[in-house]
Length: 130
View 1 (cartoon, one colour):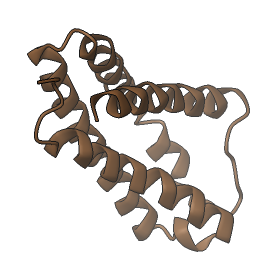
View 2 (cartoon, one colour):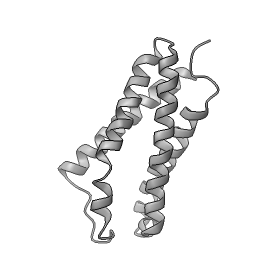
View 3 (cartoon, helix red, strand yellow):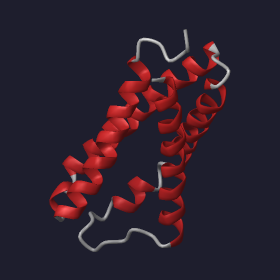
View 4 (cartoon, rainbow, N blue to C red):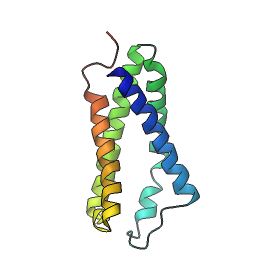
């Protein structure tokens, strides 16, 4: 379980970095998006950077079987749940899930990953090796 969580933390951090790299280089402009989409999205690089740092610190420290790794993992989990709920709320309120089937699956997958993996990190009985 600890090894799986560790790998998922690293993959998730890399996923966040890839998302923002693509967002700021090629962009995700779509004329079907609500006018407020860009403003909403532009408010997340700093909170996402915070989550990336937490995930990487938890990943790095998990090999040391430390209480710090467990605490960082739980904080990252809570932050990811909050992020997923904010994003899914925006998506529901602004019809993002209705734009197209691909938008539905992409946005739903991101939101469910943030909430689901966030909950896994936040509520796992113990992430330390016993």
